[in-house]
Length: 58
Image 1 (cartoon, rainbow, N blue to C red):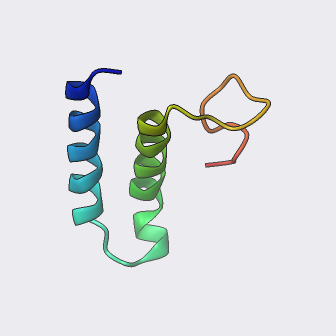
Image 2: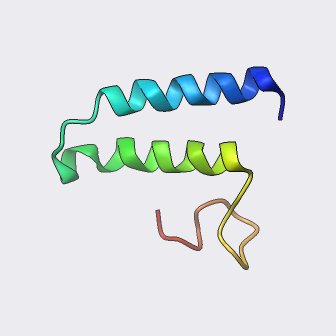
């Protein structure tokens, strides 16, 4: 992953965090997107899974 890609993902995460309302149900989809982007940024995925986020249930 290039520095530009990391920067773009970080900016997208910041933008998503800015729209969080504090309501768990309303924020669920946004938090899921943030979680997926953070996993991409860290280069991780659930153990024993070749699919991103299938193993953790997000």
